[in-house]
Each structure stands twice: as structure tokens, then as C-alpha cells.
Length: 342
Image (cartoon, helix red, strand yellow):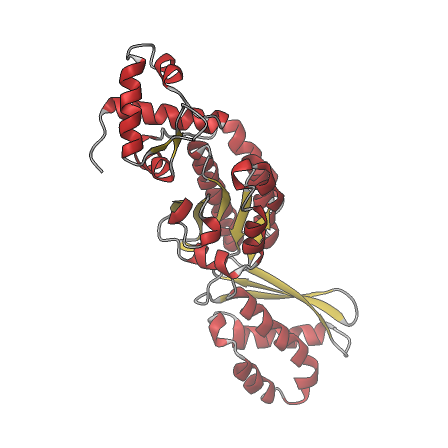
């Protein structure tokens, strides 16, 4: 694509920002007014025709105005979009909304998804932290009754998983001590990928008369380690799709696509940059050909652990949404890192 003149860049930016705001095609008279009548309508129409020729604008059949093409949105995001910073009040409000869930990764991500869906009127998608290279940092046993207890596992990736276990024997101080000794000897500091069924079977065989009491707990630990390695996808605000007329023809196809899970996991796991914007056919799945996805990675400690973002129409307030998603990902990463450090 040949380099655009500054005037054509200005015209393209005006059309995209007006179309984002109004969903109406933008004509030369409106552009002329936004440019302070410094350029004639005829000159603007010529520049608009050139932008159509370059594939950056499109002309609906029933209108004299122009609308952005997917290529136009891409050029805008990469070259013309002005940066947007969330206000201090907006930042504090997001932190307060999330604060009470900071120690529970899954609930934190669900709450963050609800917030993002509400703020953006799009579908919010997030992935739980997952890391098959994580190590077991701590395992706790929390008695709930005489015969049931909750096992809580914290991994070095910041992932916190729990499971309720029933034991035939009464869970007393002696059993708790045996449990903690086993955890300290065989689990703490070990890679979660090492905790396989074979590993558990070998360990059980060495427990002697404690095998029947400890087996339920050890199997639960193995399940929790498997969960640490598994990416969970959280979806919030799916019905927001119905609020966008641009997606009305794709609504049910998109709903089905999102609930399949695996494609979204593939999209999230393929993110190469800290923040990724894919517009229309840049997305790898045909169901997203008229949609935009924006995802930002979040880090726990110094490791990329998951991502949060949105699926919406191509007509989006990109500057505001990108800033919101980036900020939200940063808060999630900070809160999960603080949980890990406690």
C-alpha cells in the first residue's frame, strides 16, 4: 500500500471515529465540517475515492457516505489511533471490584470477565493460569468435619486449586501430621507434571498400613496437579452479541463457536505479543470473519500465565477497549502475583 498523505490519514481517521460513534456512513460534508471547512468537499470526495481504491473504505450501496473496511480498521489501529488512558477513578473502581477475589484465581477471572463484559458490551473471554512447568509451592489440609477435608494446592504459577475429600477414618491430628509429612517429602517443590498416576501408585505402595487412609488424599492431589496444567476458558456476556446489529447474521454461529471451547483456547494460546488485536478475517476461524478479538496476556511473577480479552464486532472503540483490557490484565497479574508471594 502506498503511503497516505497527511490529509488522507486525517480523513480516514475522521470517518472511522465517526462511524464507531454513530454506526452511520460518513459523507464529505460531515468531514468538511470536522476539518473546519479548510478543504473543499470536492477534494475530500476525491481523497475518499482514493481510500476506497486502496481498500481502506467501503461505500454501502444505499448511501453516499463511506464506512471503514477491515483493512481500514487495521490501518487505523496500527497508525492513526490516539492513545487512551483510563482515568484514576476508573482504575480504582476496577481494583475495588476485584480486590475481594484476589486470593482465588478462578473467581477473580470470573469477576474480571463480568466487569469487562459490562464495560465493553462485548463477550469477555479469559483463560485461567495454566503451566505444566509449575512446581508445587504448598499443600494445605483444611478439616471440614470428622470425615471430610479440603485440600488446597498452590503452584508457583499462582494457580490455587482445591478439592473436598472424604476419608473413612476420623481426620485427627495424627492423620494431619502424616499427610503433611508425606506432602513435604514427596510433593512440595516437585513439578506438577511429575505427579502422574504411576507416581501415586508407587507412593501408595510404600505407605504400608497408612495406605487406606491416605489414598483418597493422594488421588485428590494428583487431580489438582492435573488441573494446574489445564487451561480453563471463562466466558461472560455472551448475550452481548445480540446487541450488535453487525453480528446479527452470525449470532447463533458465534454462540456455538464460543461454547466449543477448544478453538478459543487455541486462539488464546497462539497469542505471540503481550496485546493482540485481530480484525475480521485476520482471525483464524471463519466464525470470526466479521468480528474483532482483543486479548492481553497477564503474568504471574515473571511468567505469562493466561489472557483476558473480548470478542465483538469490527466497529469498536479500539483506543478505549485496548486500554481497558491492558489495564485489567495488569491488575489480574498483580493480584495473582501478590497471592503467590504471601
